[in-house]
Image (spheres, rainbow, N blue to C red):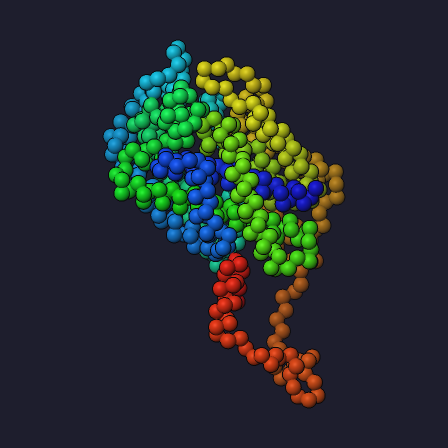
Length: 481
């Protein structure tokens, strides 16, 4: 059970992200090139595999760095072009509230923009984004993503130095504000410019516009790109969007492969060698891809035309337990292993119940009455807030009723003890011993004066070293000195 919660728990959260990325890329390629959804996913996977399956983490990081500049330049160009098409920010505010499709249901509010569309922190009860839930419920999911997610942690651990890791983290925090201007606002412009396509209501109209019966909100950005860009720039921006999706996919594939290979597989085969671990890592990446593609039809049914909301819902049901345990372990010295274990177990169980109920009871369409029970109607961010406190309460109760951790184990592992310089019981003093060649005798040196440790084959040739480096690169093995 410990292995399941510690190792499989993070994989279960990253899996929906893979599925959403694949589906998003397929939607974009479908809109731009009119390819089939599954054919588009296979093309996207083939490109991603070139970086992940053969290159490893180094290829992922280098490609992400290059793609960052491509994505930012392309997204800024689309944003400025979109504002030019709509007539500026004030024109957008007016045209967005008038963006109603021509064909809709009679005597209903279907297709009408929300009255609070331009309000970020909305009514605590009668809204889709209540401000208390956003502040107290979305925060745990953000803590998990930025502080405990394998994809983010892997980047920090791979930094050249501690200062590089800190600088990269601060830089990422600053540019996090950009998606609001680069994607959210252009999406609203897309609805203002193409209400019949983006804001469609009738199933037949939505099928015509984007191939989905529920809605076409997911196609807002691709529709804007196809509509406002000249033919030459469409291909460039297709590469930009694919770069963004590939960046996310390569990161998750590499992280999932690392977690399974280094954490789970050695539990099954403790004596597994490096070659076996490399093969297992590649095979596991392929299995994750296959499962993600197989899950896409379920996404089409349950996400109701809003992929972003879907991924936030999944995160709200699974991420708060990790955030709660993470914070408790840092700020409360009395927290112990049993408290963390049972807190994660209870949090996972409660979150999975809501996840299953949510998937089995999709939200009604705009012309249908609400039929779902209260536990499902409760906003997912309010549920995340409740789940967060349930997990923390479980951790406190179990920790207080079990033995506290040994004193040496909290040295430099909590916030209050981070500056302590005591030597832990599981540490060795830092001793530097200088050994000269004259003071050592090889155990394989015999009386005949010959060193039997050396091979008669001599040092590897330069060609042999090149072959070795190529082989190590192809199998994602890097050496550091």
